[in-house]
Image (cartoon, rainbow, N blue to C red; front, side):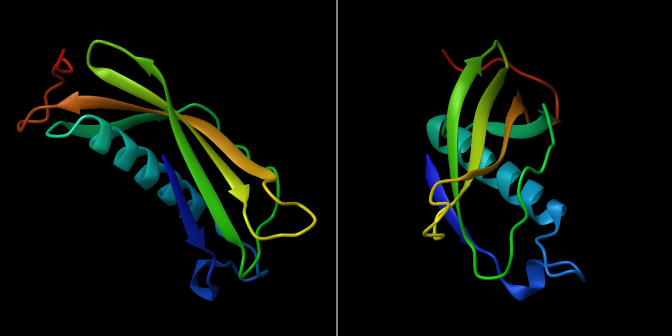
Length: 118
């Protein structure tokens, strides 16, 4: 799955760079959307991000490209590799600025872990 996000002034810290928390929120949301589209009718919650390391700074006006690819399927869990790239910089086109594995678990209406459908 692929998605894009425009970095706006409200996403920046007092130094003019993207707040890391906004990036993590978007990564979580886009990975959740990939899982939910792929496994319609299932409820997922995030249980882990494997590594959080911001490699490059991001400024206002940057268009970020998010890709989410499923890397593991367990009994009740899914894992996606999410990559974040700069999509609109002529000199650094498709430069990876962040990547992590996001793991979800399927839950029932009471919040208990349940198996994925076969």
